[in-house]
Length: 211
Image (cartoon, rainbow, N blue to C red; front, side, top):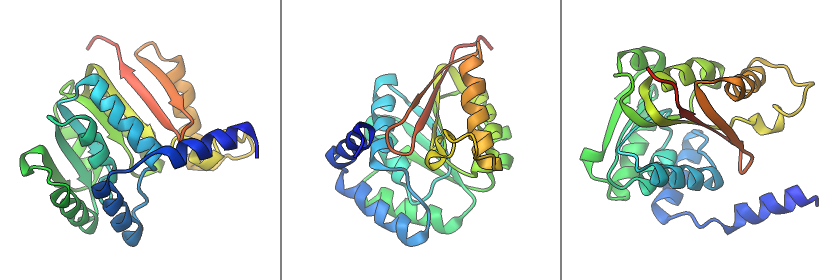
């Protein structure tokens, strides 16, 4: 086992996932709504706490795993979460109820993100979490940067595409989109960007451009 593999295994096994999130993860697996890993979820929680987030948008609800993680880090925040699968939203509502998240802290929107996002107020959110429709990830990040306030964050899990992004031979549409997203945000003067390799990877963007 390489040093990288040993480190990844240690991190993966050392994270203790709270019971409500573990139950939501089980629901997600049953639905086939692949949740973020605990390694990525815990990072999201820490970033939410560090930014003192109060207003959060999530693109891709799943069964509520990432939403519970982000609210764990931001106990006073209001989460607006968007998904076009009513079954996923129903599972997330159940997960939030079981976790005793007050109804006033979560707003569930059924619909296509491409239709919902243009109607949302720009520069109004502390965090935008992009975890849906990887083929549209660049479009969603553009919306996210519009919605995030200056100093706000856009977070993109799964950005390493299961290791395919690092392999130049892989040129499928999704892998190429993630690779381009990483490269373009690194070169942009409008954001600060970094990528965590823990779990399935997490692209972290901070909007610094004046609007």
